[in-house]
Image (cartoon, rainbow, N blue to C red; front, side, top):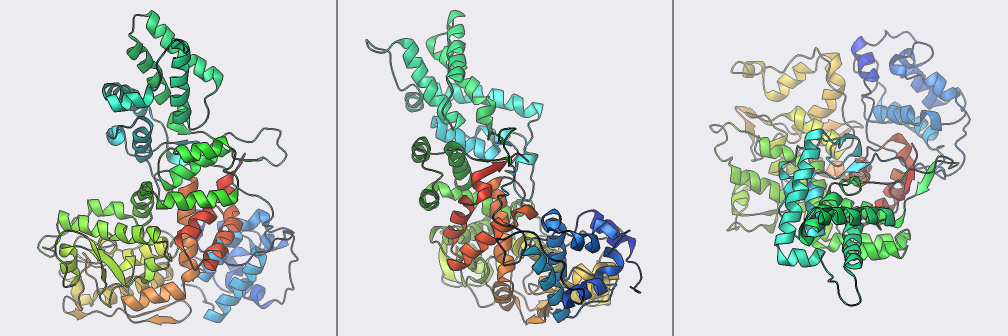
Length: 632
């Protein structure tokens, strides 16, 4: 190859792992993972060598990505991650860098198709369920579990330290640590929970459900109380040795002078600080297991179901099915998933999954210049949030197509938000379903999203474009180079032109152009909306140009058209990205290249169903990663 070596920033970015993108391709072979290298004259291979060979072939390959070594391997499995990342980077036009010769759209498709042929050889008959790190209950799960366990809803975890976030969610096992301060909080919370429970007659009767009598000794009654409480708290049948230790705690407390009520309280507190309550424990496969994979038992599946859809412990129905050994039946799992989605407790999926998927937590921290945006208020902020959650709730409850997150020509507003959108005829604070103005479509044009992706004083096409790539299309761009120059701001900035013109000057740097070319186009498609989501035709004295062209030559002329383009031309990207997010949330771990077969099976199920919300959930809860556990 005669082209110059790529800049060092390109090598550093690759080393940092920014090849990662979330788009996955269609089609798999369920046959052997062995493949032939293919003829050297293959057009796709020739193009790969031509555009990528200078940096990624042979000894000294940058970023550890050596196509020569990858193609020489008789199996795709050892290099599934690098092949997949390469496919995503080529297809998303993030490779080669803008400073290098670029393939035409047709050549880019040929390269991607050639890599696709490699990826199709992954053997999908082999189970690759992955391994979830033991998961501590996060604050939301702790509060909801306590409420269901003892019948008192007072949110004891509200003053716990904030949960760390991984892969966009706060229920990821790898980051849910247990610092000493939190352990102290658990001890104090257990005391308060038991105290309140014992003082509340209804809650107390729920726990202390039997009384000694002529045919029931005090010790037997105590065992029944503790067995039931610990079984529900541990979300599995309590073992006899565990039960005996709890009984002995009560007996020692009684010998020390405690009343029967106080002695029982000691044992209940012990249950609430047990790792079997605070963590969702799943056994690893036996050390001598030949493939290092074990099916989860019914109680483990019940917990996965309930914390996925309800963010709380299993209900009596799930416990009953688990005791009968029926939850490993896939038809039963699908039926239970539909039941649980119809239950009011599925609101947890709205509040916890949807808000984190769409990064709505940022809305609480948003500040706006009151002189430029006098309409922005805490009330309007709350209305923005409720609109977006209401749309997700509607799609979930009515089992609609997930594509409506992009294409919905309706929304839910009250009078204040309707006025903000210029919608007439809405009165009062109650949210109701209304038709959207023609310039708005789907969740991306909601004021909540447009606000959290803007700056305090102006819109940010870069932030909006980046958000679309990450959240909607599942193709996150790499981080910017460390020496990237900031965009010209301030009073003199307009002398350099409109915001669009200034960004075009900014991305003249080849190091910035590759990513900005896509981010800016997507972001400017939403530029008719100001920094709090109001419609506008001008940005200051400059008319707004919201048209653009996506990779592959797909053009659009404004926000509504952009949303329809994404729902059609980028449909698979959106569906795969959304699936990855929900699978991550359901499993409590990040999605890895080895989940490729699972993602494809889910995509096929989703497409066959017309992209119905319930079918996505059913496909997740019947997938191998949801029902099995690997040793590593």
